[in-house]
Length: 393
Ligand code: V47
Image (cartoon, rainbow, N blue to C red; front, side, top):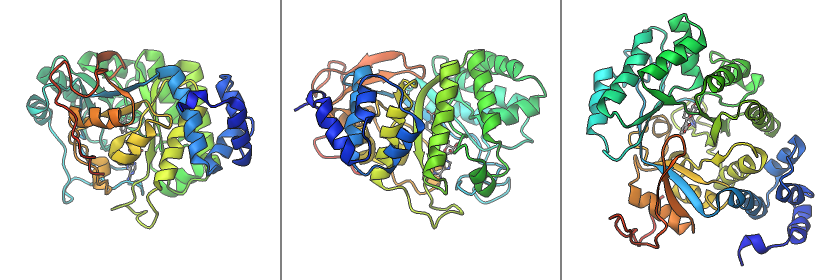
């Protein structure tokens, strides 16, 4: 029986047993959940119930659609002076494996990359000696190689450095970046907005106030961004709730976040290697709670690179409506031990989505629909039949 036919009374009876009394009624009525509700949901081990509630909220907004895009990741440098304990990607110039791509290299990589890609996602480490022109040049290089591609680049941490390097007001920097080809921004760099955790694990990175101030300025300027939460380090559940609450409050003010992406901490090759990778249940809970609590953020992304394919696919039935994209060449999570493939083909993404009983919808960076693949298994547009074997996870 489809979940939509389960009565509120039945959901409430079950919610009471799971410590979530009242949450189904509020959520179904479109009433905002409060911080105590969020904490109860993060503590709740009735994942099936949470998933069902989140799925109903997703379904009211997106029906059976599940989004993805055809994208390319370019992590333009791993030089970084922030030395965050959770990061396996950072290097100092001269270290083994350290690199910084020139604009020409970025141009050439994009020329050679999947011709169907509509987005390049460029994020990297922070290195103050890189000149202001470098950031403009890499946007220009991307557009020169692929005039039709949308450039989504620079987390708030990178923007903070770019503004310092430019010695100009944020608005002028954003205008320069826009002219150079920037179209939107990703969601990273927020980590978790707890001053206690920041002092312990990433003291050189800016605090939550600056992150919020930059995001506000960027949204007011007119760029859309995403938002994230890096969870599974040493933060408490209360600190996770506070983070989500701050994101929701900013979204009420600006409406500039397109998608929320819960980022599960990958400990391999980091100073926090002793910590466990969040369990599949915890990763799914993070997706479901994101959907239910962040009622004003339209999309919840199941970023398959870090969730794993099976969990990302299941997340499509527990609140997520987006799988990110084909993601060629990602480095940040793979350096931290992610065992997911380096890229997925469009066919593999369609297969994951269809097997979750959803309809693949290709979007661009700004969530404008490009193509809907609502035919059964074979395609009108030449997409081969999905593989009959389950995908490796
Ligand atoms: O800010 C770094 C996180 C972020 C690790 O907006 C780690 O569409 C887990 O934000 N384990 C960058 N996470 C990536 C990012 C992102 C990814 C995909 C899509 C979008 C989007 C944004 O990755 C960093 C940090 O929070 N991170 N190291 C790690 N070991």
